Amino acid sequence: MSRVLNEVFDRFLATPSIFKNPEALRHDYIPNRLPHRNDHIRSLGKVLAPVLRGYRCSNVFIYGKPGTGKTAVTKFVLKELISRIHELNSNFRACYVNCRLVGTEYRVLSKLCSAVGLRVPFTGLATDEVFERFTKVMRRHDSFLVVALDEIDALVKNKGDKLLYALSRIDRFKAGQLSLVGISNDLRFKEFLDPRVLSSLSEEELIFQPYTSTELRDILLDRVSLSFIDGAVTEGSINLCAALAAAEHGDARRALDLLRVAGELAEYEMSASVMEDHVRRAQMKIEKDRVSEVVEGLPLHSKLVIASVFLLERLGKNCTTGEIYETYKKTCSKVGLDVLTQRRISGLINELDVLGLLNAQVISMGRYGRTKKVHLATPMDVVKKALSEALPVKGAIGVDL
DNA sequence: CCTCCACCGGAAAGCCGGGTCA
DNA sequence: TGACCCGGCTTTCCGGTGGAGG
Image (spheres, rainbow, N blue to C red):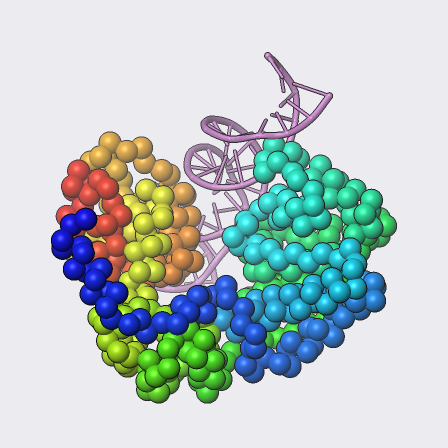
């Protein structure tokens, strides 16, 4: 092994880690207690409790902004429920699906199938066919299923509420028992639903308010004791994490990210404890990393759209769809890339807006038409860095970054 | 008050690479 | 092997539309 590397490793090992169990700072970690969410846990528990006696429970609808504990509470309650039911030895199953990650009706269904022990090919079958097979198994085993559909709004916005409608009526075909827990970030989500689906889905409702700064502080204190060694995080850093996350609509996930990244920075610098400065730098790093990561994963044409906005903005020109399209076309022809249509580029701009990389606003310029006014949503140097890493053909493209 | 620009954005359909099934 | 399905990406078509300027 190289001597340089040996030194690095030796020094790393010689410094005691400030972490005890960094896993406890990840989003998917479900701790044994969830501060300030006991009421919600109790409410959800009450709704789901009938399954303990073998009855179907009401469907529940859970709303709340990101990082308010919806997912954690749901997973927590389901976990407890399952362990309790296994004592009673029932054929109950619970299934958690994140609709945004899973993406399509077909794949949501195939998750449900695997929850009841049915394997289906990941593509190739008609969706109706998969649904058919699913109900058959439910009927045959007289199964009992609670399905948590997280980020359900993403599914409905993209694919409509057909699947929800079918699921909400499933036991009318005497196909076992199925209850739904719908989780949504978006309060306006209801508007997208068929009234029949809505009324069956929201038999019960739970609303999660954002955490306050003090509540976030309690959450952090819990996690600090789980994940760091004693005294490794200063009081001030915890408060700062809480305050910064509270400003960002009380997002606990954000607070934990800040703490984790600040911890990693401190460890990297072999500092004995996490200081407020680490937290501040963590905040910048998180934003930078987010932008880089998102840009990196973008399809080539989306990257070119961002590059076009970047170029126009640097020249101080105003970015309208038309202007962006012209710049984009020039860049394409420089590399000999096929250009997409303006309609498509308009769509890509909207997607980038949703991703938070661009801000796009439809404005009217009266006589001079109607268009989208676009600008970068993050500072130019951050975008520049992300683009220069993510555009493999930057030299050829003539995008002088 | 009307016109008309430069787009917006919905809908439908096509293409392609992945797959199943009989 | 051919009919058929999915999902992602894209094109084509086309009916809007806010408001400056006539």
